[in-house]
Image 1 (cartoon, helix red, strand yellow):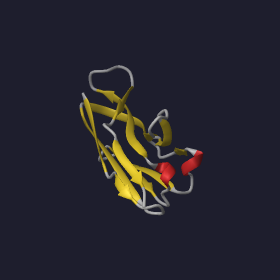
Image 2: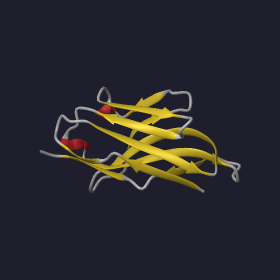
Image 3: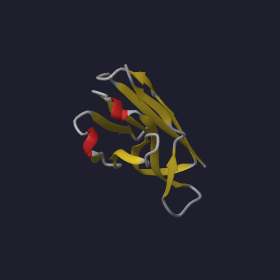
Image 4: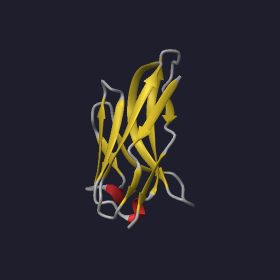
Length: 121
C-alpha cells in the first residue's frame, strides 16, 4: 500500500506564506504525476497545481504567480509554496500522487489526509 503524509498547513494572515509538504511511502515502484487539490466548505474539490515526473507544471488560474509546486523524486515528496495568500485560499489542501506499486499493473491515484489552510486576520 501507499501512504501519503502531509504537513505545513495552519493559520496565516492575508498576504502571508505557507509551504505544504507531502511525502509518499510504501510499496512504490514508480511515481508519475503529483499534485495538490483543495476543497473549501460547501464547494467541490478543485485542482491547485500538478507537476509531472519530468517537472512540467500546471496551475489553476487563481493561484498562478502566487503558488509554486515542486517535487523531490528521490524523497518521493511534493511541495507547494504559497505566497500572497488571500482569504479565498482558505480550504483543506490534499496531496495527490499517481503511483505504480510493485503489486499493481496499472497506475493508481492516492490521496493524502488533507491539511487545513486558514487565511484570516
